[in-house]
Amino acid sequence: MENILENKELINSYLSLSVQKQFNLNIDLKGEYAFAENLVSKRTIIAATFSDKILSHPIIKMFLTSIISQINNGNCDTDFIKNQLKTL
Image (cartoon, rainbow, N blue to C red; front, side, top):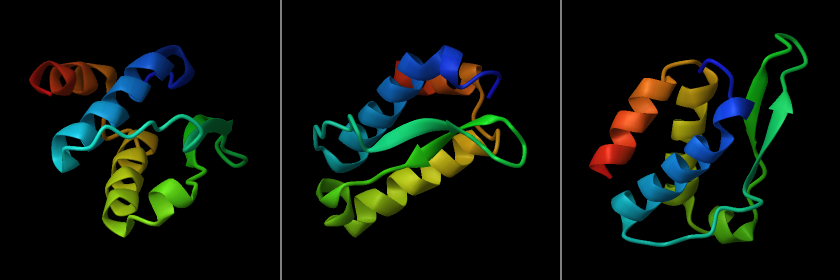
């Protein structure tokens, strides 16, 4: 993704709406991840900081981990996320 911090709100919406659509649950994801600098690449990444609220639901944890990994690896760009939000 071009710059994760510049697209923070877009990412927040994408993660929340993805969980809502996939699991029919409205879960507040505030505090469940943070934006941090990768020590090696110096790129901003999303770091999972899952609480018991997420850890107690392994399938949701796996789902969020997968989406976060896709974003961190650059497999989801801004245009992709915007298009996904239109369909969610």
